Amino acid sequence: MSEGVLRGKVAIVTGAGSPIGLGRAMSLALAEAGARVAMLDVNPETLHTTAQEVMAAGGPGSARPMVWDVPTMRAARPPSTAPSPSWAGCTWW
Ligand SMILES: NC(=O)c1ccc[n+]([C@@H]2O[C@H](COP(=O)([O-])OP(=O)(O)OC[C@H]3O[C@@H](n4cnc5c(N)ncnc54)[C@H](O)[C@@H]3O)[C@@H](O)[C@H]2O)c1
Image (cartoon, rainbow, N blue to C red):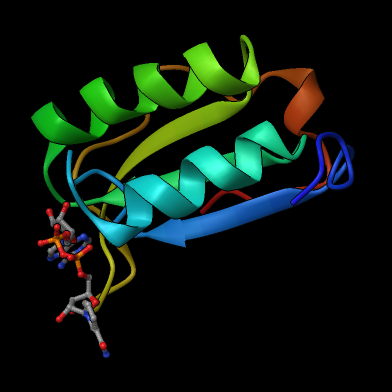
């Protein structure tokens, strides 16, 4: 993907937190292409570490880690902060 082609878009990646997984690779590529990436994973520790990597690549605010159990679509832990205005247009449950 060329840089910036996804600027203004929001992507949702499930299983995003593995430090070696497909979700990390997809999140990095999406953020580098300009998207803001909602990173969902059930493991808070690896998720937050991987989200820091994605923000280092895509810039501040390019990733939003969310601790979710995807099959049940329930937050495994409530979001620690409210969505920033830059995430307007995305619906948070
Ligand atoms: N079809 C293929 O050729 C192919 C190839 C590689 C991987 N895969 C599949 O793709 C998937 C991802 O592979 P990977 O290598 O990135 O795996 P991985 O184990 O590195 O990452 C999976 C991530 O999903 C998270 N996760 C697990 N249960 C979850 C849940 N209930 N809710 C939210 N997150 C959850 C884990 O915490 C982990 O961070 C796997 O299912 C794998 O079998 C398919």
